[in-house]
Length: 293
Image (cartoon, rainbow, N blue to C red; front, side, top):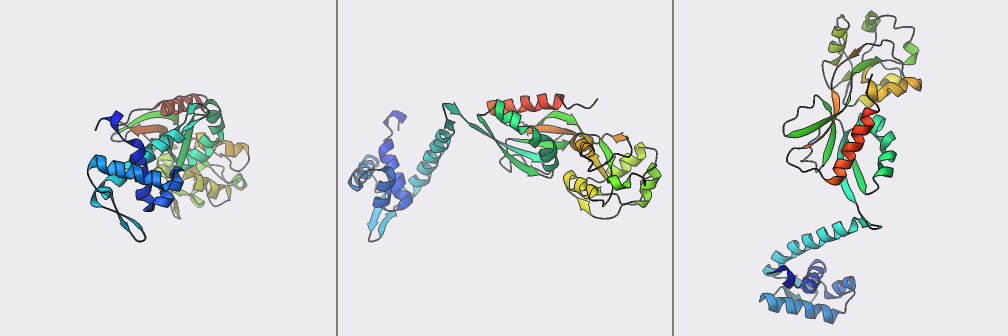
């Protein structure tokens, strides 16, 4: 059937009646009389040459033809409604679903988001925090900010900031940490990314002591444990350097070890939308202003 000849009013009447299985409720939803609604549905049935409903004492029952037609129309009308709802004050609003490593979201992204919203009010960000294990397509995301080396199969990655690891400890430990050897007698908080402590100690020409205790899946949890005096932590410097300014943590040693970077990622199979492009450009600008010297 040609699009210009689609009986939209009749299709809308049928779809409402099919959802409610009641002509009175469907007529109220569409602000028409029950007689007008019935007339539209009869006209549609005559046009298609089929019966779409059977009347029963308590309302309506869909025929096989009605069952086949209903979900197609419901999806179509829902899709149109969703798009129209995204127009506000003469502007189209684009929704961008973003997955973000929780520590990056809390410590780096959120303090800057007001600037993005002020500059791009037509882009609605929906942020889904995770622990760096994320399936962009499987979770219905448009973009994801991930920590790693930037090499993921089928994924386009744009580097945001380098994230070298450095040691943070509770302020109360200031007098206990005169040298790296002092760490052998103190609890070292562990990340699910194994090998970071070994890498850090080897970079200082030292041997990593045995590691014990719980394993955490976010840097934010490790930082909080360290701030509460439960151990020393290896944390990405760009995310937690402000904790030292506030006095929550200290950096007893300046040594850094390269562990990875934060990247903005999206599937190769997708095409960047205007809203996603605006967010990418804004992120790049913010990251450039936070580059490590």
